[in-house]
Each structure stands twice: as C-alpha cells, then as structure tokens.
Image (tube, rainbow, N blue to C red; front, side, top):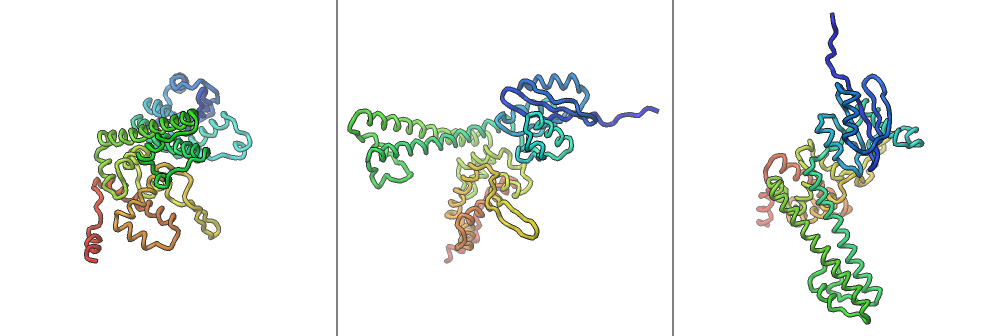
Length: 358
C-alpha cells in the first residue's frame, strides 16, 4: 500500500535587502539549504527557486525599508506567501546584537518565518503606494516652505530690518510679500539675495497649494464615497480626508478602533510589571504626519462639534495636550465608524436643541 503526501513541501526565504545586493537565507521544512549574496534582482531569485524548489510552497520575508513594497508585490504576483515586517518587531538574540551581519540577519528572518512568530504589515497596492508618495512629497514641500520663511526672516534680522508688527507672525498674507518686494537694501547684492529668496518662496508656495488640490481631485475621482464620508466628520476637511486615505489605504482592513488608533500612533505606551503600572506617554510608533494633522483636526472639532466641546469641558483643568489627544482618539472611532457603516456622520441633534433652548 502506497502512502500519499497530502501537503506540499515548503521553503522559507529570509531576505536582507539593500540597494545593490540581497543576502538570501533559504531553508525547507526539513533542512537548512544555504545563505548567499546575489544582485538585487527579483527575477534572479525567482529563477533560483524555480530551479531548486520547483514543487515547493514558497514563503518569503524581508524588513520594511528604503526599497519599499515593489519586491513584495513582484513575488505576490507569483503566488508566493510574502511577509514584510517592521524591523522593530524582529526578535534578536545576543548573537545578533553583538555579531551583526547581513547573513545573520537573513538567517534570523528565515528561522522566525519558519517558526511562525513574525507578524507582517500591510502591503499596499501600487496605486496606494504612489498616492502615499504624493502625500509625503507634500509633507516635504511643507517643511521646505517653513524653512524658506525662516531664511527670509533671518536675512532681515541679520541686516537689522524690522518687520512691521502686523506681519510679524506665521501667517504671510499677500500684503507682506508686497512689502518684501518693495524693500530696498543699501546695495544691489542685498536686493538680489532677498529677491532670490522671495522667488523661492513663491515657487514652493505654489507647489504646496497645487499638491493639495491634486490630492483632493484624485480622491474625488478614485475614492469618492470614502472621501465624502470622512469629510462629514467635524474637523476633517478635504485635505485631511485625502491624507487619511493616502496614509491608511482601505480603512476596512482595521478590525477595531484600537488597531486604527495604534496604527496612527495616538495610544499611550504602557509599562506594567510587579503590580506597578506606568503610562509612558504617546507611542513613538506612528504615522507621525497623520497624527499631527489629526491633533489639529481635534482642535477644530472642539470648536464645531457640541459633543466634543462637552467632552473637552468635562476634562478642563487637566493637561491640555492630554485632553486634545483624547479628543483625537475619539475622532478615530468616528472615522472608522463612518467607513464601516457607510453612513455620513451626523452631529447629535438633541445636543443642538438643548443649546438652542439655553
């Protein structure tokens, strides 16, 4: 009587990815194969695996980094089982701490993949990935705009030129730009330095505004339903709705509000040992730009939404920053709720009537 094998053999591949080379560590469910270096070409690894492990079910893992998710998508299209992991989630022993090499890193990934201890992060589609790139380009432009403003103010300060009081703030109205353009230094070199910085400011400002318009237009076309649902929440405008979609992708992948809040990074770190519990403050693991925007939106929500106003007043007297983070945390519930239920958010009508009666 012959025995039939009901499960296909498996091969586990750990990749340590760099720009020019990959270090590959391969083992099967029965034995360790080898660790080697190769050029950073997905097709070469595909060819090697097809040649040596033709009938195997392939599992592959690598750490998220500068090479993004294009490698993961390539192998997913081959029907491989692919994990991309956060480097902070990969356990290391004493050997890996004191003897760090690409070969050891790849082998460690392969071992943990085989043992099933690794948890992957979301692998975005190519369209989602590129929309995220546009949103982050806007963040970079925002930083450049802020830096250019500081350079202009520093130039004026260095040469003893006082800015009119009505313009000496973070808002730069057209009147301030006109004042700068009329400003004259004692020599042509000073004029040229200032005019060059003004031209740079105008270009970056136009790019800053244009990217925001492009993001909103893209969402109106490609994510119209989710975009409008998010905008129904007080405090969330068109641009923030676009950023949420760009940074989070399909919000339906989050099973709970806690998962979503943790992904954004508006949950506290905790240390609990021996009956002693300590809150470590807001977690450093976050989508920092989205978290920043959501905190700003929380301040707007407090002004526009009576329920948020009531919640804020209830906690007055405590640390203001802690209160507004809690408001932002409540907003994550609303964000996930409107997407999951496909129902626009409605401000509590009973609270509006109560305020009108007062």
